[in-house]
Image 1: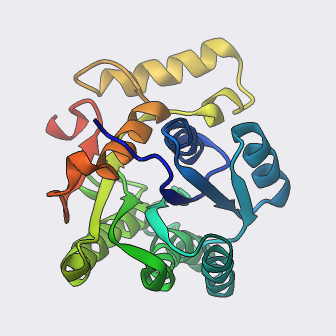
Image 2 (image 1 turned 45 degrees about the vertical axis):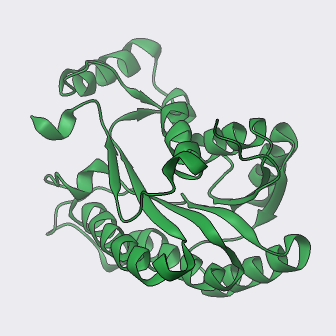
Length: 247
């Protein structure tokens, strides 16, 4: 039985999508959950809805990360589960990509994720679980996604190094790489229902299982990797894309 009751988890970018689903999943299993995000109102609302602790912190800001770790240490002492989920996407060919777009993506997805782990290592319990949210694009980059794909490929490399460095403390470090995932964002794009459906149909056609992933699917994997059932798993990237990477 996967018993996570009374453990403490920190989830970055926990006010929507996969982060929100993971917070809900872990909360239901008796975990003390702290969610973070850069938008104060969004974090406060999500924390209230979920019945968890919300702390405003921008993952791209190293000072925010340091303050977050200090506050979590002061309020909770130590952390059993760290889900580094916050990330941003951006499209553009290499020729079109601006320095601003490059920096925005890398500052959150790579630099911010790296230093979130770095600053939390001192307060991670021995035997803790760290999970990075990566992407199947790390393994199957395409046109227009060079910076985003590079950020996730580099993140997976950090994950593997961290797994080796933290192994003496029995801290496990893994990543989850979703493919097309249906989140609330897809319902707020401002397009009519038929247009949204046509876009989804095109995406689904590229997935062997002919369906979109769900945020809840990823949340369950995060929960599994954080449980006793995964005590011998570290340094692994779990691709959840319905077989998309195979075709």
